[in-house]
Amino acid sequence: MAQSCPEESAEAHKRPPSLWRDRDYLYWWTGNGLSALGTSMSTLAIPLLVLYLTGSATQAGLITVLHMIGRLATLAIGGVLADRMNRRAILCLAPLVQALAMGAVALLAYRGDPSIAVIGAMALAGGLADGLRNAVSMPVLRRIVPKEQVAAATAQSMGRDMVAQLVGAPLGGLLYAMGRWIPFLFDALSFLFVSLGSALIRRPLGPDRRADDAPRAGLGEELRDGLRMIRRSDYLVFTMIWGALLNVVAEGFTLLFVVLVQHRGGGPAAVGTATSLAVAGGVLGAVIGPWLMGRLGARRVLLLSAWVFTTSFAAAVAVPSPWQIGLVIMVAMAAMVPMNVVIESYEVRLVPDRYQGRVAALSRFFVQGLQWVGPLAAGVLADAAGVEGAVLTLAGAMALLAIALHTSRRRLTVLDTPLAAVRELDPPPAARPLPEPVA
Image (tube, rainbow, N blue to C red):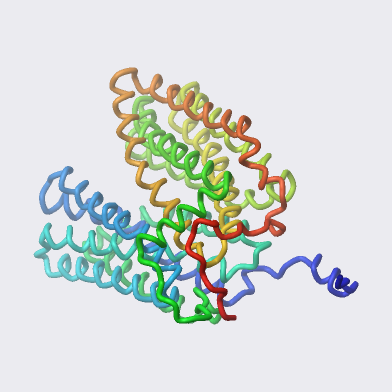
């Protein structure tokens, strides 16, 4: 048996270099950060534009729904494409489609004759491209970032997107007031930066080419291979279901949070301030998430975060003023982000590269496909039991999810292994055998 030399052992225990000194990571992080900022601005500006044109909140909501439908329509199939086509090409081309869609809306708004039908078509086209880009993002991150730094990169991405939301909404409103077309032009340019940054990444992004010329399985069969890989891991099955339910509760609480602030006498300014505090909590959670994982371990972080998140629901009902509600939600968001960091980081480490796109996309499809249930159920509960009763009901649901983490220890045993030492899953026996990739 080969023996490792002292130099190799010392090298293995060295602290990895900062991700901020990695040029490829900076290209990826910066491009996606600008895109998140632009999207945050256009997310505010599109409803404002539609309301200006039609005065109909229903039509404004329909445009948002069209984007969501487009995103879900390509998310799962995008995962298959990410495992069989050039990921760099997808990562460069999909943002160009998004840039064209937002550029068209900017041009129509500039000319002063935008059509609701065209805006809806552009929202759908942008959503279709967004699904493809999101499907390839997780396997690309796995190629760019060393395994021991996956948690840090995941947290930095979440923190970046939280800051983009914090800055993007007021900036989008300001730019919209200067010219209705300006936020859409900014968003279009941000997608161009995503495409450029992706093209400049030097590392191979995969997938690795196969060693033979055997025909590939069909898209449906490869999707089933992704499902077989998920079923191979108790952890992946549990976290996909648990994460979907968590997302339903969190989305419902997002709606009730606004209703509760208004119920306590807060106006639009109070809602905006409380929302800013909540986003700031998310940024804080992104900063402390990897640090907590290194000191407490992933399992303890997941349990602690779940119970802090649960307690925050009840505390939001107990405090009397809007700014206190904002502080409570700040704590809730600071707890929720580390939960996501733990779940996503271990998923990235468990799944082999050639299954990464399918598994990540299927998981996101399932989670995002159920998120609409949260606001709908929360609204019904608020009308039936009052806003406080609805919040406490969601707190009870969140408590059940936290208890499930304790009663499912066997399914979460991988969390007791340090992230860098997690062993990849073997391909599922039921899957069609694939040849080894060529380096």
